[in-house]
Length: 405
Image (cartoon, one colour):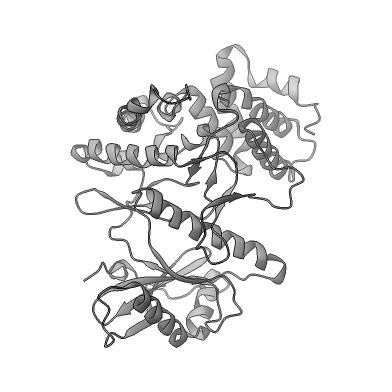
């Protein structure tokens, strides 16, 4: 019998679907999707992939057993021999102008998981069938995938894992980072395996419409910062505080770059590697890494970014100590894993040399950020770069009148 994830789901909960919310989009999927058709897809996929498949096995998809997020609803696919899969279905609308981009995004996520499955031991779901178009008999884009065992924790790992299990989790986390560090490419972008996800992986642009694709870590960080700065300034035109904050975060790029790795290689990176996307069993073994949407090859410095490693300025040193200790455990395990390849590698900088450093914290504040947090992040970054010798007011005087473009 395979793992049954739906035992942990409660659908809309006791309150039912909320009006004027994404709940209504989920409800629309549950009401009009052709689940009978999807049951047939699942049976055919099972038959083509299973060595011990019985022709007597049938499939049931119960729309009452579901969970959902901001873009997708996940529904259980149950086979009569007690094997369970997941159907991940896009519920947020896709207009015609977005359909091609969405299909590319979806294909890249599937290609990423297939590449990880074939080239690493990082625990990711098997993908059994998919359709990127809503113009299919089911009525919505979908992915049929393996239901990985385990569940997510309620908050950051260092605070939610009992102390006796933290060394083991740190070792497993380091192993995952090590495998990502070594699943590297010569090009920046995202993985594609063709329209049917059955070809060898290649790297395609994240933004195919961009005039120039980044080819170095310097260009990648600069483009990321310019994009975030434009979003931040859209609501604060001419505001000297916001202009200064954007300039400080742009200037921070020089504190991030490792000269040895400017031209790569570029490792594959999960954009959101935190407790919400990591599954654990009852013994705190990592059983799955989920939600690879947006995964891409990145500068090595970006791979060191995770909310699991960052301390919180509002907390006391004692309150941050668990995070620091967990991070140091991960770094120590990672360094041990890297040790055999340091002598024979052409690289002089490895992930363990970056993770936990001041440069890694600056990278986190510059990349794992949101427009509304620009001033907050810039103040933290300025303190890391300049210390107490330069005040925020002096920085605003210096940068506030400068043209960001």
